[in-house]
Length: 93
Image (cartoon, rainbow, N blue to C red):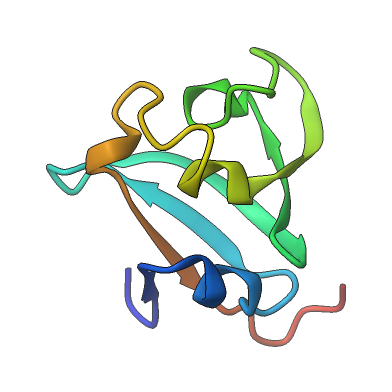
């Protein structure tokens, strides 16, 4: 994604801008899931159980996306998944 930044450490993750798009990219470069970063690693997403174990199969919810790096690091294909974020420009949060 043009203008995106790779996140490799939890410290980077916690400093992502509020309202940014967060993409979970498979080892083959395919977008597995996306969410919106709210603040301090919390995100809003729908059907997020593919990357976060505490999520539900349906419905929007606010989740601690930091679990991806810890508890859920081996969930599904998370061990080979990269996280990117893209700041949102010109939007009001």
